[in-house]
Amino acid sequence: MNKSATPATLTLQNAPPDLGRYIAGFVHRDDAEAGEVVRVLPEVRASIQIMLADPYWLRPAELGGVWGQLPRVALWGPKYAWCYGYARRHIKAYAVGLTAAGLRAIITRPAFNVLDQVLPLDTFNSDLAKLLDPDDGQNFDDWRNSATEALRALFASSPPIIDPVTPALAFLATAETNAVLKGADACGLSERQFRRVFRDYYGVPPKRYQRAVRVDRMIRQIHQAPWETDAFAEAPIPFSDQPHAIREFRAMVGITPHQYVRAKRPGDKTLRSVPVSGMPPPEN
Image (tube, rainbow, N blue to C red; front, side, top):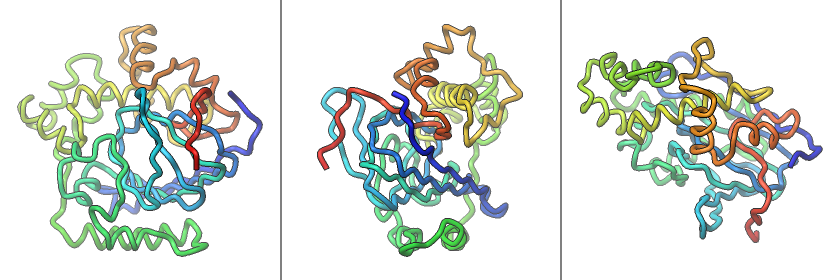
């Protein structure tokens, strides 16, 4: 699957400290050598993405799925199912990574309402969608500065949102046993309350998040040159053994870790995009 191509350029800028509760960071991706169908892997973090070059298409993985063109300015909900993606040649995107509190502030409803969906941002906030849509030729730094001000104004205009289950995230990523119970205790909630609140903010029950985030940690560790590293790298990923790790990876991603590594193009820093053969692109 590997092909000789100019690797994608990925730039990550952290959010300003005053917006860290709501924003994970700003991303610029520029890949002028796309043009192939890829496997788009799960991503537990929601985001806003603006496609600036060729239209981008997604297709569900299940049999009979159909291609759908994404909105130019789109809100990506948390993704727990892999799918196919395609751009005819050039992918250029500006993006904002959202925390659970940031997603809640924008959609003003529980996260499970946008689980595994990509929707026009103006469905939730038309003014923000207009403000985040770059002017023609606007470079990433200038866009990031204007986007920061637009988001700062949005978050300041409503009561502060505090993610009540943040203390549990480290346990779900690293604890070898009783991760859900430990997470609930860290949040001062009963297990039943914890499961309900967690689903409101992250879209899925904590056990499903736990499986996904551990596979995501594995992706970051087996990638040769990831643009984002494992925030919990000092703690081992708590799979019982290698076969268990491979089974969980394949169940979430659709391929084995070995197949993932082999499929990546040399120098490609993207974490959740893997070339795939045998799937025809959309007729666009």
